[in-house]
Length: 171
View (cartoon, one colour):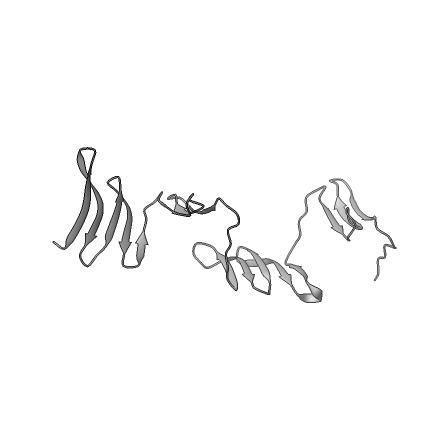
């Protein structure tokens, strides 16, 4: 029938290890339960199955049925590419874009909200509002606490010059 099966005898019965189907798939079993299936497009694993890399399963990739996860238990997980982009599931909304020797862009609802830039020696562009909660402080300058602080304490708003020199407001 075009099928080859490899089984072993363990604990008083035969257990399937490998099933090869002519002009079709190959199935791998562990303890008589199918774990891996080859398909015309590659390899398929069912829900709640994972692939382990490294002697101690240092890198794991798996699907839990309701989500997917890449787990690195040692060191740093590195993604390499001249352009790395993160998109939503439908691939119709950008979430983040990282370009080598270029910008980092962050999006909300497919609308760019933050971008690093090389303008004026390097900086950032913020699109729309910057929202800082009460008691949050914008600190400007090299001093440990900031030479210039802008903040709101929940009741009052402040611009505080704590650095050297003069605070100038120009028209």
